[in-house]
Length: 168
Image 1 (cartoon, rainbow, N blue to C red):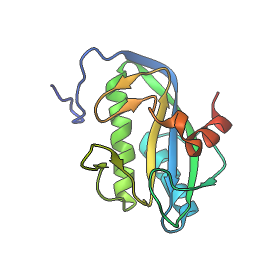
Image 2 (image 1 turned 45 degrees about the horizontal axis):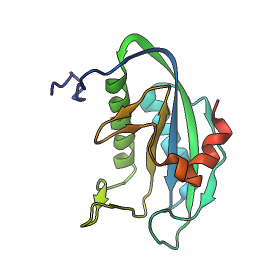
Image 3 (image 1 turned 135 degrees about the horizontal axis):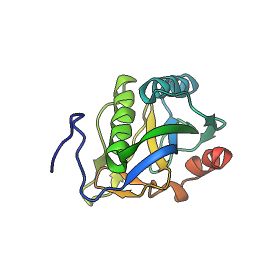
Image 4 (image 1 turned 90 degrees about the vertical axis):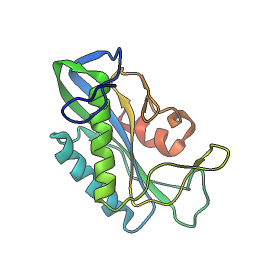
């Protein structure tokens, strides 16, 4: 596998993308000042993506999903309209966005990566911030480290309720 100058893997047979492209992200926090965490994530995303978000949902309080915790989550969805240059590789763009989201999570204090139990099931924990790529235009990606559309979003009210507020 080759790597481009940004150190994002170059995937085989990726499609090209250009023009105005809607990017939808899901945000969540259940640690500390949850609203401030979401606000900080939005500000950092604006900087990282080089554009102010086009729409943001209400902040919705929800129960933890996939694990037990006394702490409630605060969740939101945000839409960015990206001006993507002609000839952009969709996979490279998506992995670049993922890298920016993960960098923001680390900058805000999130540690570790995905964890799995002995039977291969995902283990979820409390977190200061979680940023997930939900949709990127009509791009479809099924890589080990990135799946677009997000494969579990339809099963998660904490994603779908805020997403429906801003989806067009």
